[in-house]
Image: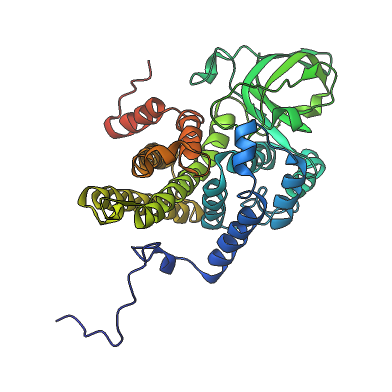
Length: 398
């Protein structure tokens, strides 16, 4: 027989219908609430204007503030990094992307790509030189892998590095690089006679340029650049010594994709909350539209997918903290959560009607941002094939 409850059930919480907050520790909640307050104070009052103008003013100040919160490289240990859990890092990503995907991208590229590459594959000298300043936001980093002609197939990269005496000389181009034109250091991946290598490139090195990309309809409040390397000469110790081949950049991408699993649910939550509040107050045919069956069906379906996605992200975070998270499981999370987040944004837009396209509401901004999130760090098709190979044991990439 089931036990009789000794106390009344807690009330239903529309903001947390599954009671997922019970899964968090006090420290988890403190991290989440700190990042949420920062985003509410420093991003939300300005983000619509930044997005409309296609700019992220004061990015260096924002980076330093995020560094003071411990949000840069927060799941890394040592070298001034916070050493937070994977779950706490995920919660931070969710809160940042609830403000805007561009802000979460700034943090993800800094911590999960540039800093992670140096932390995992760099020499002790590289770590000591770069990581403490990157953790505080004094130095912004970027990560150069994608090229104009090679996105999903990095093995075909044309950027190359050749030996010239003891030096390395890098030439090539990278494309769609977040933080590129404001970065003080770039982690650049290049083909060599010894396979793909990573290089730590100070951006003031002669021959390096990072023109900003404009005319974007997505991630408008984010710095996106091209990297141009024209015979960039680097000393021998600029190469990351602890990795050869694509295993290096792909492991960095897996770490960053984990943050997207959480972050996409932040964009979905913000859109859902806007639609729910609108449905409670917008009146048509004599009553709030939330009182009509079709609107309630939309809200119920969105709530189910939103909180399933957060539960999935939390599960993957626990696996990462336990050292048991596989890249295929990260693909599972990114494929599901970004796809569902876009659908939540689109459905939220239908509830808001014409108001859904206005920047007075966050819904269309999140929807257009997520179109980029859907593609970068692995398209839908690539993650489907990763899972397909894991399920069948058959490689369908070629």
